[in-house]
Image 1: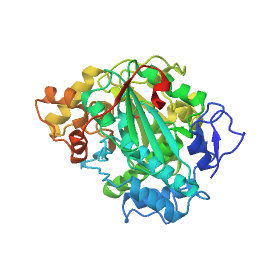
Image 2 (image 1 turned 90 degrees about the vertical axis):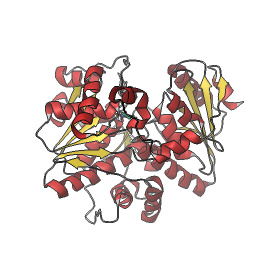
Image 3 (image 1 turned 135 degrees about the horizontal axis):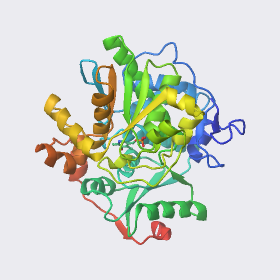
Image 4 (image 1 turned 30 degrees about the horizontal axis):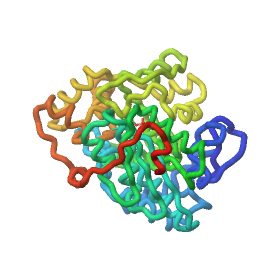
Length: 418
Ligand SMILES: *Cc1c(COP(=O)(O)O)cnc(C)c1O
């Protein structure tokens, strides 16, 4: 499989390895595969999710990895459960049973395992810089912790992350170091960019969410779960996906393109309305983000939109393939309460956007709402509302027990290398 930049579809072709190591295409576009293969004929779910994922990913890595290598990477990356409980035709795809309890563990762990394997072959070393405002940094730190040939520097803004988020960014030792910056998230991002531009700091790489190695694994759980749903109910479900930078939903669109039994894809967003506004008006207008209860989705200029527009280039196609609804903070709270009252299920504020869209717009359809994070990560919002204690999953609890250590630095990137 070859890869091209979204900004130059007939231009230079790249291998998967080049696309992963470069992250962003040289012209500023995002890497996309030149074609979407059909689901392999020997596709089986009997050997579990990790094995299925390796089968689905193989056409994308052919020529770069042997089948057995990809199987090893998937077994190492997806070493936690994928679960889809359901209540009648209403299913919930729980993507939060990984080490940091959010769906980002899938992509971050896959990238980490891939890079470790690559560096073992070449004997090189690599430093990964990641600026984070919360969830991504924790998933990346956890995924890369203890991996050979790789050092990770996590950069986060002082006083802008929650206590539990900070713990997940700073509880590491060995090859991970964390830096608390006297500044904003934008300062952190700028520092990382400057370090790349300045050069002279060895083999630098980023692990941000536009990397194709984080996208491709997100496609596999949609294929797997849609077949699982069809086997249970004999129907093709609507997938409702809490979305911000739309990386997770791009995975679902690619899954449908490969032939997964999915009837419709719906993007549930918070009060950041860029995508529903585009679907309504035909004018795409990225903007500043606004702060909401579902903060991992506080995005006004979705970074993966370029991949969705590449898939559905005209407004008509985009509208036919996708719908999107905005859910405000009042309705996020309402949904958390209703799901708890009706089903005794505790959900996080992001998942609540999806549940609100289901109960409001698709009450009688076969549906899968994607649960993107465990509610224990957002206990400061959910616990006071429901007056409950949320049990903390063991993997998360283990991180809370570790010592926190980090460097306090000014917003100057040189301090990252002292
Ligand atoms: C990152 C994140 C999202 C948004 O996912 P995108 O791929 O950016 O659309 C939703 N929920 C949670 C909990 C997240 O961490």
